[in-house]
Image 1 (cartoon, rainbow, N blue to C red):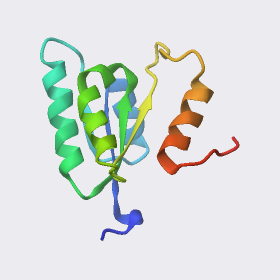
Image 2: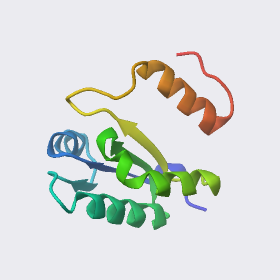
Image 3: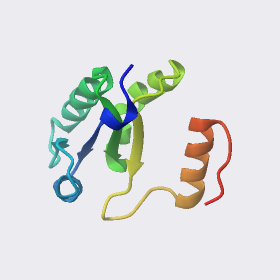
Length: 117
């Protein structure tokens, strides 16, 4: 079993998100600029990260969720603990009207109880 402190954090996002997190020290990333092949790129990189036991957290740009919805559902059905996939909004905003509520529900579903934020 891999110790948590030894797991990598990876990011799948646009250039701004990736560069910001690379500045913070992330070394696993996939920077996408859009286009026709974006669906396949996002899916391919996420599959690679899901199969890698050295990855503990995947930061996913919220805009790309629609491309990998089935992979995330499968991961939840399998009740996998790692990697944890965390969606973050783009610089243009979020699709969730209540972001705080969304993250509270996400945490409750992941760990099984509520946290007060």
